[in-house]
Length: 495
Image 1 (cartoon, helix red, strand yellow):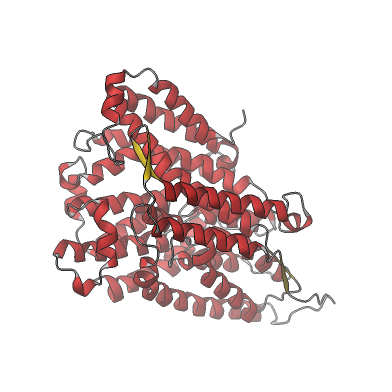
Image 2: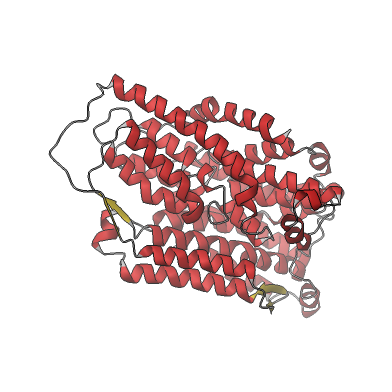
C-alpha cells in the first residue's frame, strides 16, 4: 500500500463516514464561525486517549520494535490512531465533529505541511561545496551561521543545508557525536526562535493570530542569551577534543574553494517568506467550506509556497546532479507528513477541552499552572516527548481559555506595547505566550522526537557512519547541558 497520501486517505474516509450523517446535523455544523463546535465541557478526559496513544507510539515503538519504525510504518500507525478517534467522534457528534476535523486539517495541518515541504524542497536545492576543515573555529562558525539563518529558512531548511557540510568537514575527526548533538541543539531548534518560518510551533501560532514579527522582539533576548552560552560551550568542548586527537588537520591535497551552488533558490526562498508575510498582512475575505471559513490570503499563501517549491524542482531537478550531491530525498518530509496527519486529528479533544479552561475535564491542570515559568516548563517538558508543534498549540489554547480570551483578540493584544495594555489579563497573556513559545522551541531539543528536524539530522549522521547515541543516550547530553541552562533562563527571564 502506498502511504504517501495518508492525509488524503484519512480525509476521504472521514468524508465517506460524513455522508451518512443526516442533513439536519450537517446544518448544525454549518453554523460555526471557524472554531471548534463540539463543546469542550462535554468531552471526557478519555477522549484524549488516541492523542496520547499516537504520541506514545512515536516515542516508544522505535525503541521497542525497530529504530526505523516511523519510516516504514509511520503512515499505518497514523491512519489507525486517526480512525480510532474519528469514527467514534463522528458517530457521537455528527456534523459538529466533521466541522472540527475539517477545520484542523484546513486551518492547521495543510498550511503546516505546505510550509515544511516548501522550505525542505527549496533548501534541498542549495549545495555547499568546497574543502572545509573541521577545526573548532570552522565548526563553531558553521553552527553560528546555522543558528542565525534557521529563523529565516526554517530549522528544517537550515538543518538540511548545513548538516552534510559539517559532517564532510569533520570526516577525519574521531569524536563527532558532540558536533551533531550541538547542531541539533542550536540549528534544529533554538535558532528557529525568531519568526514563524523558523520552527513549526511558531508557525502554528502565526496561523492562530500571532503577528509575524512578534516572536522576533519577544524571544530575541532569550534566544541570544542561550545561543551565546551554547556556542561558547561548544567551542570549548570541540577545542578540547580536537587537541586530544593531536590538534592537527591532515593535508590530503584537496583545496577546492568554498562555494555555494543553487543560490538562485534564494529567490524561491524569499518568495516563501513574502507569501507568509502577505497572508498575515492582507485580509481578502474568506470562503466557506462546509462551515469552515478559510481566508483567501491563506489559500494564496499556500499556493505560492507550493509554486516556489515546484519552481525550485524545475530549476534544480530531483534527479539532477545538485540534489544528488546533496543526497536529497523525500523520505524525511514524507515521514513527517504521515505522522502529523494523525497527530493533528487526534489533538482535537485536547484543544477543545483546554479551550474551555477550568470548565473542562482538565480543570485541575488549568488551576495548577498560573505563572509564566509554569507554562515554560510544562510546555517545554511535554515538547520534549510529544513534539513541540501540537504541544505549543495545546497550551496556547490553555492560556486563552484560562484568561477567558478568544483567538480574535490575540493580534490586537500582541500588537500593543506591554506598557499600553490596560487589562491585566492581556498583560498576563503576553507573558504566558512568551513562556510557551520559548518552552516549545527550546525544549524541542531535549529528545530526538521533540522537533521534526532532530530525527532527520540523526538519520543523516548515521548514514554518514557516525554512531549516534540512543534515545536515552542523547537525553543524557540534553539533561547535562540544556536543562541547567533552562533553569538559568527561568530565573533570568520568567520569574
